[in-house]
Image 1: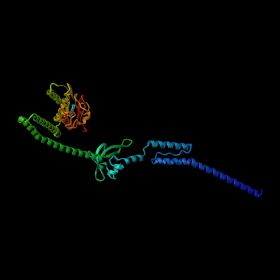
Image 2: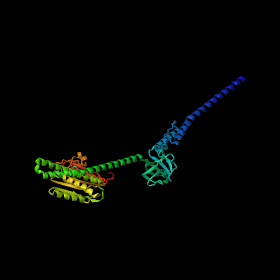
Image 3: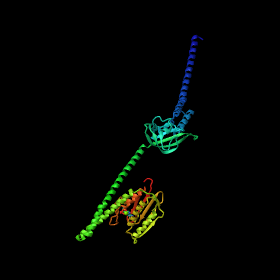
Image 4: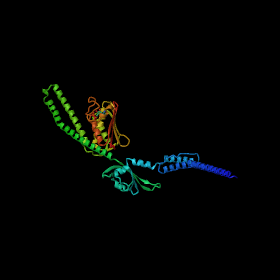
Length: 435
Ligand SMILES: Nc1ncnc2c1ncn2[C@@H]1O[C@H](COP(=O)(O)OP(=O)(O)O)[C@@H](O)[C@H]1O
Ligand SMILES: [Mg+2]
C-alpha cells in the first residue's frame, strides 16, 4: 500500500475515533443534564422544604416536577406540611400571643422561681424578673410565699419603681405529660384603674352622704323652729275667735277659721317632715320582727276606726324578718293605712299582706281600691307629692317617702304598681346584696 493511502486510512480512523468521542461526550452531557434536572432539583426542593419545617415554618410547598417516585415524594411532603400547618401551633405564634397580652404572665419552676415573664410582666415589675422568687414580686394578705392555685386573688405587685400595683392574680400548676409538677403559670391583671374608680365612687358617696346629712339637719332645725311661731298664729287666732267674736262679723270669723285650718295643716306638714328626718337619723336596732303580727294588729285598729266599712284582710301568718321593729312598724302603718284609705270609696274591699316565694325577702301589701296611673309612678315616693287630690282623698304625701327610707335603711328597694280603679300593690325587698 502506498504511503499516501496508508496516511489517508489513518486520518479516517482518527476522524472516526474523534466522532465517537464527541458522540460519547454529548451523550454523557445529556445524561448529566437529565440527572441534574430530573433528580437533583427535586431533591434540592425537598431539602429546602425540610429545613423550613425545621425552623417552624410549617406552611411550605415544594414543586412537583415529575410523575415518578420523586414526584410522589414531593406530593407526600406537601400533604404532610399542610397537615402540620393545620394541626400544629408554632412556637412563634404562642410567643406572639403571650408577648402581646396586656395581662402579666409569669411561668415559674416548681420552687416558685420565675422562668419566663412576658413583656407586660417585665415592663411592670422591672426587667430582671427571671430567676427571682414569685414571693418577692408581690405582697398579699393570704401570702404567696410558695405559689399556689388561686383565682382572682387580690394582690399587690411590687413594681420596679417601688410602687404597688393592685392586681387580680390567678395561678395554676404546670405539669408534664406524665402529670409531674413542673412549676406554675401565673397571670395577673392590673386593676389600678378599677381601684381608682372605686375609691372615687366611695369618696363621692361619702361626700353625698355628708351633704345630705347636713341638709337633713338643716331641714330638721328649720322645721323645729317653725313650730313655735306657728303655735302663736294658731293660739292668737283662737283667742280672737273666743274673746273678740262680738267685734267680728261672720266674714271675719270665717277668715280666722281658715287661718287656723291653714296653720293646723302646716303643723301637720312640719310634723311629717320631722318624722321623715327621724327615720334617717335614728340608730338601727336589729332583731327578728314578726311582721304578720304587726299587720294583724294594724288591721284590727283600722277596722275599729270605722266599723261600718266592709274590708276583708288576708294576712300571711309567720312572716318574720330581721330588722328594726320600730322602723318596720312605721313602714307597715303607712302602707296599711294607705290601703285602707284608698279602698275607702268601695262598698267592700280586700287588703293582703304576704311574702313572695323565692330567694331573698320580698314582701307586699296589696289592695283593690282606687289604684293609680303608672305614668306618675316615679312620683310616688317623693316627699309631699301625691297622685290623688285632697278633695278625693286626704293626705300630705309623706307616707310613702317614709316607707322608702325605712326600706332603704334595711338595704332594700320598694316599688308600686297600680291600675286606676283596680287597686295597688306595693312590693319591697329587705337586705339586698347590692342595694
Ligand atoms: N294603696 C294606694 N292606692 C292608690 N294610690 C296610692 C296608694 N298608696 C299611695 N298611693 C298614691 O301615692 C301617693 C303618695 O302616698 P303617701 O306618700 O302615703 O301620701 P298620702 O297618703 O298622704 O297621699 C298618694 O297620694 C296616692 O296618690
Ligand atoms: Mg299615706
